[in-house]
Length: 77
Image (cartoon, rainbow, N blue to C red; front, side, top):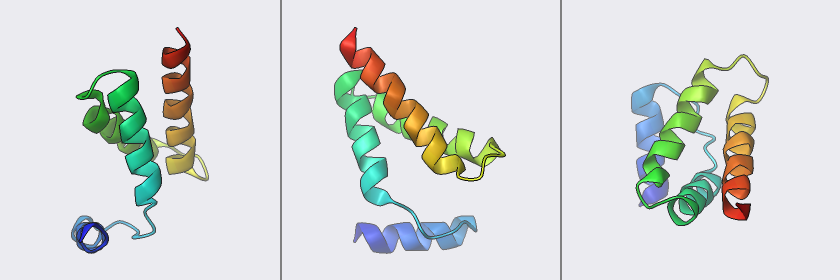
């Protein structure tokens, strides 16, 4: 069901459909457990926003890596 939803949403939004859903869910889980529950949707939204505004060759991966690094830093404090 989720894969179908993601495919349909990508079409509706006019974006590529090669979305790594597992990576997004892992990042959301890390944010929810490492910061607070409400951080999950905010984190994934901000990563998507940063990726969309980026001029990097792989903006999504870069934005997710930055968010994951920040979450690891938070966890170690």
